[in-house]
Structures are given as C-alpha cells and as structure tokens.
Length: 258
Image (tube, rainbow, N blue to C red; front, side, top):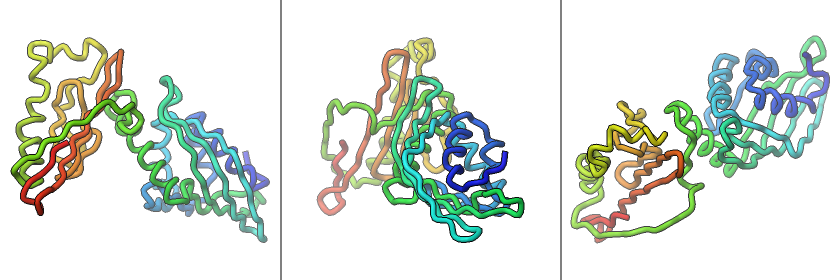
C-alpha cells in the first residue's frame, strides 16, 4: 500500500505498530532513513531502524495520534504531532504517556511518500518519558515478567540511617552482603517462591552493573553506583518495589542510607 498523502503517515504508523506489523511499519521508511530513539541516538538505515522498532513492538504498544499537522514544500513534508502510547496492552495494560513527534517525509519517484527522518519523541520531556517507559517494559519482557515500573507504584514508607562509611563502601557492602542474602529470610520456601507465580531466580545480571540478580522475589530494575539500587518484583497478588539510596554526608566521610 503506497501513501499518496504524507499526512496519512502518522496514522498508518500507529495502526501498524499497534498491530505488531513490523514489515508494515518498515514499509513507511526510505532505505536511507533515520529514526531517533528515545535515548537520543539516531538509527540510520532500515536494518538499524528495524532493530529499534522490534524492541518497541516487543512491549506490545498501542499508539493513538491525537494531533497532526504537515507543511509540504515541493517533494519534502515537515510534520509534527501529538500521540498517546500504552505499553503492554496485551497483558492487562502497562504504563501510558503522551509525546510529541517531528518527522520529515519525501515524495518518491512513484509519487508516494516515505519517512526520511523520524523523531517520535522530539522534546526533552517526551524523550525522557519514552526512554523510561520503553526501557522498563522491554527489560521485563526479556525477563519474561509483567512490567513493574517503580515510579508507578504507590508510595508506602521510607526509613533512613547514617553510616560511618563513605558511599562507595556502603554500596559495596550492600551488594556483597545484604543483597546476596536478601532472600534467605524465606528459608526453605525460597526454592518454591515461583509457585505463587512470582519472580523466579535470574542467573545472570543485565549488562552495565555488578548487582546480583539472584534475589528471591525481586529483580534489579536500576542500579547507579554508588548511589541508587531499585528492586522490583511481583506475584499473583501484588507488585512491589524497594529503592535503596546512598547519599554522602559529612563531606563524604559518612553516608545516609535510605
């Protein structure tokens, strides 16, 4: 199906992404097109674009354009629009948010229009929201778990303690001792934790951090050495998160663990 009006491209993109139709989505791009990802990194060429869009489709998204406009000058069209996206629509729904896009399309020799530049999250706020939501959802899809976004869960409580050690030492002790025995409190129930339909053990940590993943009932969702560890988990009856923050105090000679 060729696109005779560039104003139709956003709606077709939304429909094909929502249907999980990777070939249909790829048919909307020129061979040398560029897609700007939510991390701000440009994917140039159809193979690179395909890899980025396959990550998006793995999150089972549903996209709905809410506003679209285009300025056509000769064979070039500059477009912008607003859209809503919900991730994980196939398993009860996941995070949803709104964003603003900017695209450039070009008229082809046969008169049809294709994307040559696509920046679906073209504002700083939109890019950050997209990056966080897509990244969290894609990680949980790879792990085989439903998405658990810590910032979407209701706040319950927080406790702090000052430790007479620098942040790097506190971080190392948390990783080496506390987290590695975190699930021990379950005792003999530990090996059967997944019978509730909850988080299983994970044998290998994701690249980029040295925090252990073999924690009964939890997985590491985020780790920023030496200041932040976010653990998330789920079972049939609940989704939950535990955030550990390490802040330097006393000119860095001590730390506050929250």
